[in-house]
Image (cartoon, rainbow, N blue to C red; front, side):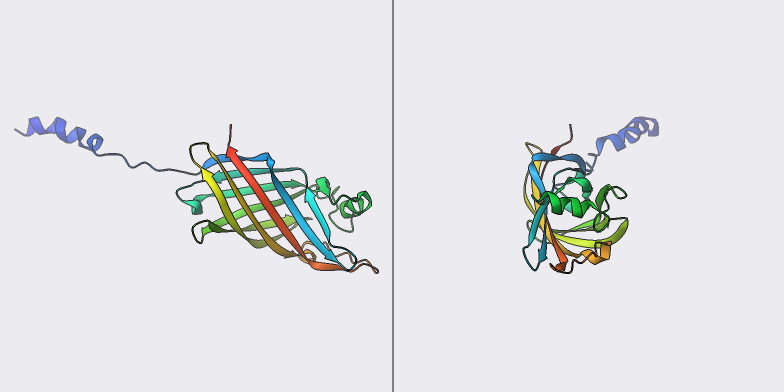
Length: 190
């Protein structure tokens, strides 16, 4: 009698439905629909600028946002404030020292889902070889699972002195606080 049950017992593990484990999937930045901006306040005029060249490695899990991660690498020489003389000064050793430090990076350590579309991305920001932890309050604007595309945006404030960007002109004092803004659309990695 026992011999009849052996094949059934051997097949039993295959009869139980398998649990599907979803993992974060790779996405890339949609270049045409993304931007990284900053605002630096000063006495004479706030400087509004952008970084025109960056890469983003995005691992996104729509079901469990906390499992997601991002690494953003910015070409520091791509800084653009629409004033060539200022841009050249920002690339110099007084500020970004782009010849010695060609990239700025943000590497998330963890992402917290706060509410329906609100998240905090906490990670390490490296500018000019100095790394500091920051938290970026963000909003997941949308994610379309059928089209494998989404958009996230956020902003935070950093102290430029923490990253060695401490040059201070005598005539046009620059605020230590710099506002960073990002708006990134992403799509499935090909």
